[in-house]
Structure formats: C-alpha cells, structure tokens
Image 1 (tube, rainbow, N blue to C red):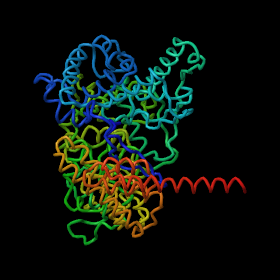
Image 2: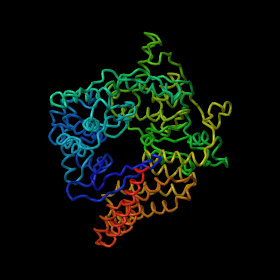
Image 3: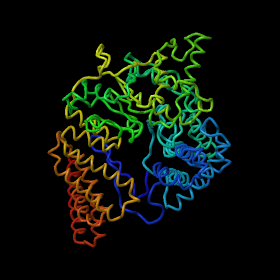
Image 4: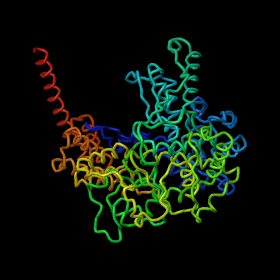
Length: 639
C-alpha cells in the first residue's frame, strides 16, 4: 500500500493477470513520499538505529518482525495513540502471541523501535503500518463509506498482520462474513508472526468492541470461532513429500510450540517417492537429473519444451547465483523459496538451502535422540509418524556434524524461521523433491533426520556413476508447448514475478508479452531504488517503460496467441499513466486517455499543459459519445 503518488494500480486484464504497480498523479506535497520497507530497514536503517552490542545479540529480521506484528501491527496498537504500543503495552502482549522475546529482551527491543521511529521521521519515510493506522483511524472516525462489502475471503491469511485483518472487519457490513484460510507453517512473509488462534482473539475483541459501542453496531453479534476447520487430507502432494514436510512440522512442535497452531498431522491422498538426498558435493549431479546425461559430455541442451515442470529453488537470490554456469544459462526456472510461495511445480530441486542458512541445525540431532528414547521406552507407535526409526550408515564426513547441540540452541528463533522456509520449499513440489547442498556439516542433521525416519532416498555417491538403477531417479516427463510457457508466464505475472514471467515468454518466443513483462519488471526495480535515482534519470526511465508498453500494444497481433482487447487496453492505460508522470510524455498521455475514453484524465492533462484547444476537443468528443449512448439506451427501451 502506498501514498497517493505511489499508489499501486492493481488492475486486471480479462484473463485476470495483475498489472505492475503504476504511478498516479501527485495529489499534494504533504507527508512522506517513500516507504521504509523491510529491505530499506535492513540495508539503510539498521546500522543507524542499533548499537554494536545490539547487533551482536539481535537480528534485524526479528526486530522488524516485532515492529510489524506487535509494536505497530497488532490490534492493540491500532487502538493506541499514534498507532503504536507503549513499552508497558508491549510487555503486556501475551507470550503465546509474541513468543520470540521474553520480557527482558522486549525491554531491549523497545529502544531500537523508538530510534527506528525517529530515523524514519528524519528520512521522511513511512511504513506499511503507518498507512494501516491512517486507514483504520479514518474508518473508526467516519465509518466505511464505500460500496457495501458483505463477504471477504482472505487466502494466505498467514501473510497478514492483525492490523490488516482488523481493517477487513471494519469495512464489512457483517464481520461474520470474513472467511480466512491459510497454512501457519508457511509464515515466511517478512515481519509477520501468525497463529490461527490469534484470529479467534481478534474476533473476540471485535465482538466486545461492538457490544461496548451499543446502538446499531451492537445489533450485529460477532461470532467467535470455537474450533478451526482443519483440512487433514492433502490432494495435491503425495505421501513421500508430505511425510517429509510433516517431519519438519514435528520439530516445530517440539521446540517452538507457541509459534504454530496445534493441528492434526496432515495425510496424503495417494503415495509417492520420498525426497532424494544427494550426498555428492558435485553440482553436476543436479544437471544430470535435469538433463538425463553427463553435462561434460552431452550435447543435449535445455529444450524450451522440456523444463517447465521443474524449478530450482534457492534460499536467497545469492545462493542461486552460485549455480553452475550451464544451469544459469539454461531455460530451467530458478527462483527463491519466498518467490515460489503460493506456486507449485512437478519437480523441485532445492539448491544449497542449508549452506546459506544462518541457523544452527544440530538441534535436529537432539530431536533424533529424543525420538530414539521414546521408541525404546514406549514403542514406535508413540512416535509422531507411528513407525519405527531406521538404522542408517553414517558417512565419515558427517559424524562430527551429528553431535547434539547445546540446549539453548534448541530454541533459537532463527531455526524456527528456517524450518518454516524449508517446509514451504518442500511443499512446492507435486511429484519429486531433490535436495543438493554443498555444506556437508550444515546439511547433515536434516539428512540424517529424514533417513532415520525412513522418509528419504539417500544417494551415497554421484548419480552419474550409479548406473545400476537409473529408474530411481526418473523425474516428471513430458513436453510443454509455447502456450504452456505463456500460461506459466501469466502465473508469474499474477505473483508480480516479472523477471520470471519475461523468461517464460522468451522461451515461448512471444516477443510482445516478453516486452510487457520486462517493462513491468523495470518499473518495479526503478520504484524500489527510486530514492537513489536522480529525478531526471527516473523520469527518462519511466518514459522508456511507457514507450515499451505502447509499442507492445501496437504489436499485439504478433503475439504467439491472441491478446484480448481488454488486455491490450490495459497495457495502453498503464502506458498513459507512465507518460503522465513525465514532463515530455504528457501530450502522449492525454491522447491515449482520450482514445481509451478516459476523457476526465485527458482534459485534466490538456488543461495542465494550457492546451485548451485539445481540452475543448476532448469535451466535445465526450459530449458526442454521451449523446450516442443516450440514443442507444432510448432505442433499447423501445424494443
């Protein structure tokens, strides 16, 4: 969410594909104009708001999470002066809701928060919570004045703060019409702490508020959910992958019970192979599984119609940069775990996840020892999976990494976050998961954990040398057409992954849609670094982006598949908004808006340019169109 001049125009084409975030006319000069998001917090602000000692004991990600979810993003904060909690209010937040820090640590976090607010003010920035508080305060004072909203379905609810859900409740005619669904184990959005139990608390507070308000507001009884509707059967992913994901959840329940809801173990509808763990430290194994041949000797290239089903997931963009060059140059889709959230692929290759992880993974060794003790004293049926542990041969290189961890490390909140990232990565796959990691010490605890549970295929040597049973490693087969790549490109467009969308359109040889996706990506990149870009350069780049979209709309007939008229108009509309925000493009914007029938915008621009003749012509054209529409309506009434 943005200020007026940065508002994101979230229009949709007839095919339902979201636009890029586009600029609108500036409405005034008051208030901060740029957002302080997570990246800005970490890259710019953290160094100035934390001391040397605080940098050693806290991470910026966890402090940012406390700010977004509790200090400013909680329901209590929304009803506090200035939209933020006092120190006492922060200390009063229940430990179950805010499990990351105890009372002593919260007292250390609060001064950082106060410095953050001062620094944000000095830099003339606002954050997402400031905008939410402004909206909430307006709703609280004036009520919702828009089109009546009777029902809202909030999917991926684990990515939203209480403050955002509270705005949902305040805009609805009946708060009972809010339907929330999601997966608390996929809470990987920056700044978010989530449990479904906290939504129940939110409904309780809203019910109490309406009762206290009295009058018409109290007439609507807000029901408080007494029981969550849990969907125990997964119809997308088979048992092999789901069991491994459930094993990750078991660790979360053991060491971080307050960070997730206590739900029954998920079951698969059909069976399938467990994850494949590659012990070889050679990345050529990954290439072999994708190509089906040795990359050093094979002349087979990554075909445009062969790799749409697979994705290489990295923990961060930097980890993906370490892929072998022949993979970087290939058509295979490469993205981070965070980018892949909400998407699904037949085959997932998890690349160097543990190598880049900041967490200590040896607590998994402690958990394996705990399971062995439970099995010995109570029997295998008392284990979470209900099956006995498996004796495995440990590689000599892994023995040192399988020592138990210190008790303090077991409850390291960084491990909690990393487990949720790992769970999200595993559950992106429908058919196969292959895990490769170059850091033998970091990967060993998880590899050993899955092996002891009997939930993994373990390859003890290079798969290129293991020719005895190639069928074990057969991945999803089948070719994909250009239309399949276009469909996947639109899937990425919907998720604002414009660079990945452009990649898909390029593979599909659709130059028109490639131009559109690239233009959207350029604008998103420009917007993210706008504070560091000189105004002249920013305006020139914006003009070029508008020109690219205008060119694509003019060449729509050259696309590999038909571009619907509504979608083409959408591109023209975005191009017009781009031109409007530049000094040299305003005349073009006025003409485009006029052609699109947005006469109000066209007249406003022409008047601003003192081109009163053009403004008059636009008004005259609008008059003719309105008269024609009126005649058409009269004719229809006579039928």
